[in-house]
Length: 90
Image 1 (cartoon, rainbow, N blue to C red):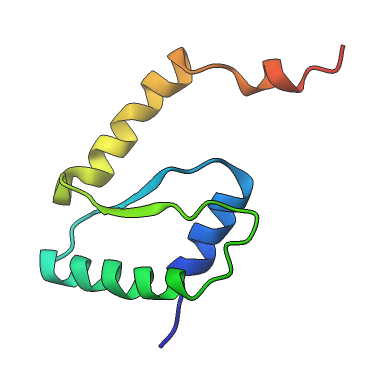
Image 2: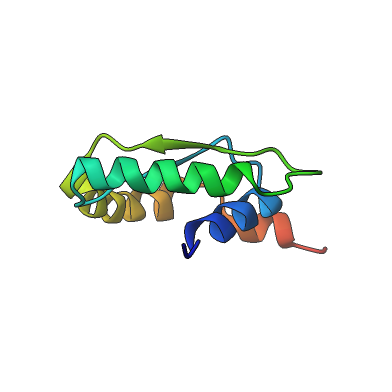
């Protein structure tokens, strides 16, 4: 079985403090649950030493997840803290 999501989850957990990762989209709910089950099994086998294993959560939005994610980008661009403020060396 190919594991493609597990390395992404592990990398995200290594870089930032991730409490949970939501997987959603225009997928059949049974297929989504199977993806979550298999990904959880792969994550259980991963060596999490020095990291906190994030929970995988089934999303509730479904087919509209992509549109809603894109719709939040303008709000994020205008109201989120500017990352360059934290990178200023002077």
